[in-house]
Image (cartoon, rainbow, N blue to C red; front, side, top):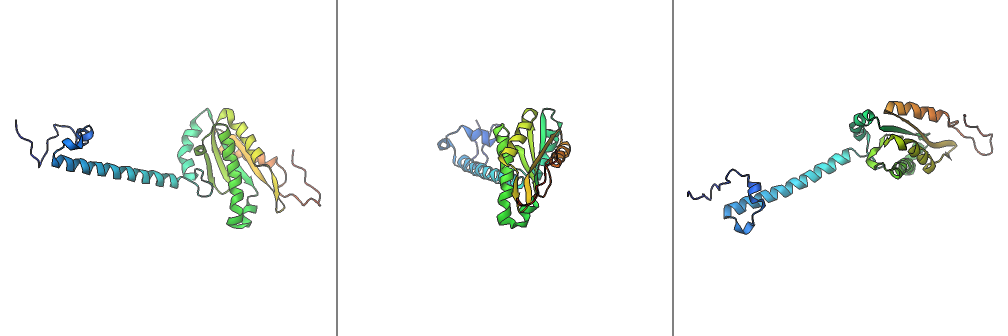
Length: 212
């Protein structure tokens, strides 16, 4: 039989990675050991690179303030969600969120976080992953949820984040659902219209009754 050259070890048609997979490194020739170590190092570096890439991709799809998926993530999930007849899209809007903005980031951001946490927790209580709850910008949120729990999620979110008065304004969340974001947005605005006046006078003044 022809001797195998150390300069060009034969693989018998088998890729190096497969050839070395079940071999004890002790049984390898010096050149094979060198190749084995090189492949092992490359494999380790590839795994590290993949983790870095995965982390970067996740960061690019995550809202910095709330930790929820952002608009980019929603855009990637939108088509499948809106095409699924068993899925509802829920829209959330924070009423008078401008009050938060006037307080500055340090004082205002916790209020945004509280409202979105209520939406996230309501969804989680009904088996919806946090990766299906999105902050798509400003005070707008979206949830992708099974149709049978959409109403319950909206009700629970309002329980977790009830209306409150802040600087003379009624602050709370408005919600709506539909087969698409557009439909949910229309329903959300209709809900908002039934929630009463945007401005609530001080207790010493006459109160404004909510629109029925």
